[in-house]
Image (cartoon, rainbow, N blue to C red; front, side, top):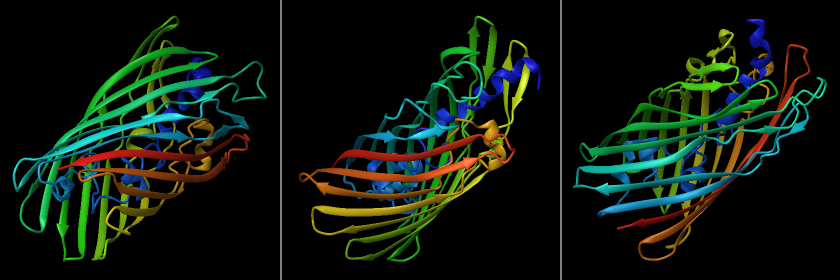
Length: 382
């Protein structure tokens, strides 16, 4: 790498820390609504609400509505994390989400959802205590997706769905060597899904979300022009749901996330010339298990477990200091309670267990992260 880029290499690698803040599987969120978080993301085969338009649009046909359903919610994320023993000063973030489903006729259901999928960044006063001066790292990133889509009930057993992904991403970067103000980029992608009823008690779900092709961030700084593009990875999910009756649902999902295509190497153009950031992220396979039980006419309880090996290995720590996308084990609980004939409220809590990773290069660099996430949701259906 050009020597003029060496000073910014570590900081630029920290860009991905912003995309990890809202997320628990690499830089991807487990869910978008309280019901999805309560199932630890195991929702591709048996969707619970209109947020399915963002995860598996085919699920819009299975919401058991006469006309319309609205799901509005928000959450709070508390992600205590450290880089080389230094705590980040930003430890509470707001997560918005909302979706609705509109039944056009017995075959066609339209839906649209919006959710924050990653963002907010870190605020480290000094990530290199051994270096002279304060090596501060402050990043602010937001990534939102709007997904208008539809589901079509092909027959009694098969539903197909699709959604357009409209993406908004903003990013600001600041350290002792570089000051890049908030900027924004837009992008697009596509989601496809299906749900197939295997029997009265079993159904199969699958969804594919394409790579989100983003425009570039372009900054005009006092030292010159900077440019970088950060696409979002493609995902493929397959799930199996078992509903034997008596209000019991058990679902197991497997998800593939193609991180290596977008976060292995990222081009970063600076006034000194082009460079390549070797983040080294690997593809990730995620396993999720969710259980739901209706205990009476008004109340449903749920719990889930989610595991995905960190896409960052020990050999990549030096290039991802502050990129704290390393949580692997997640445990969730949740509940839904009917508040009226057409209204219900949901709540969920998820804990991502502490994970610490030390560089294998001998540098001594250490990154550490755990997460606490609580979500609230109000639903209306008729």
